[in-house]
Image (spheres, helix red, strand yellow):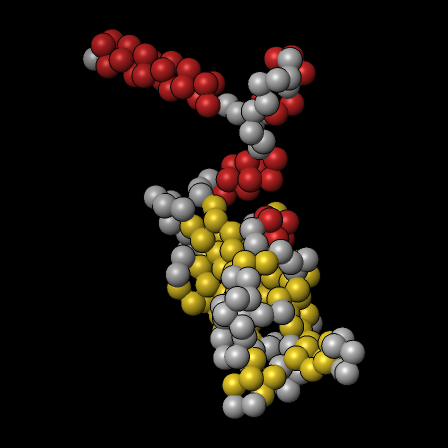
Length: 193
């Protein structure tokens, strides 16, 4: 069981925004948010597959029945907007907001939004469109999050002894450990009574 802690702040335009949270393609939360809120969710993870967490907004209107959930002044500046800002996102106490934002926001084009609108955009954590941020992870959770946050692609142009990009690359060490475990298991089988 993974504990997801989410803190969000909404803004109002015509009505309050609807926060939607999905985990492994299952809807776990969908409600309007009217004040700054702290939510706690308990996620059932799949140990055999890559897990996917999606956090987003739905039901924002872009001209549906003449309603726009964004209001601009005569200079084109937005003066009212229906948004949700992700203030904090933690999984088992580990801040993962940076990982959510590292993946672009996936926009769901609706109503009268132009079809040439980008389907993926960078964001600072404020959700301005219908769509989702997402994060994938595997188990064990802490290993997956650590690697996503700090593991870098190896840079072979650096000296072996000062190559900081090799940190968290323990694949060869793991192969050796597995080989030693196999040898120990064979010895145990051979000499067990």
